[in-house]
View 1 (spheres, one colour):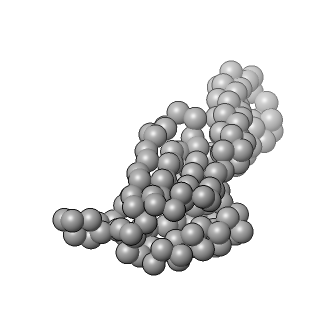
View 2: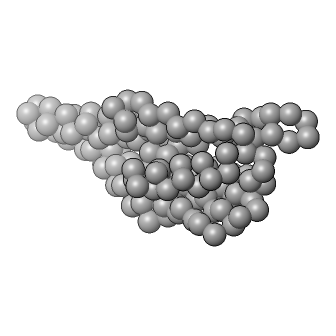
Length: 152
């Protein structure tokens, strides 16, 4: 039985999301109610722009909690967004004999990593939803490849 679980990285990213959103809100309020000190407003506006870009980048990378467990007969996959407010908990389980293929795609300077898993059942081939692996380290991705290659 083998497991890959990135719950600690996901918790750190969740805290980072909260810090960014809180800072964006605070700097936005400051810009609205600050008296006419133009130089300070420019600095705060620059910081707010940088925080907004960081937030949008994190959304673009689709940072997800990712759990995969191989118990020999079935592969269980659980995932959800690391964003503290936009969560949709999802999971799927399939027999290892149903695995047909998988593909790991890397894009955006190898920061955005995604996996597509194709399986087969009595109705034919189907593709599971694309999963983000952006929070997994290269070592964890190699371990994931070993797990999946074992059953192909």
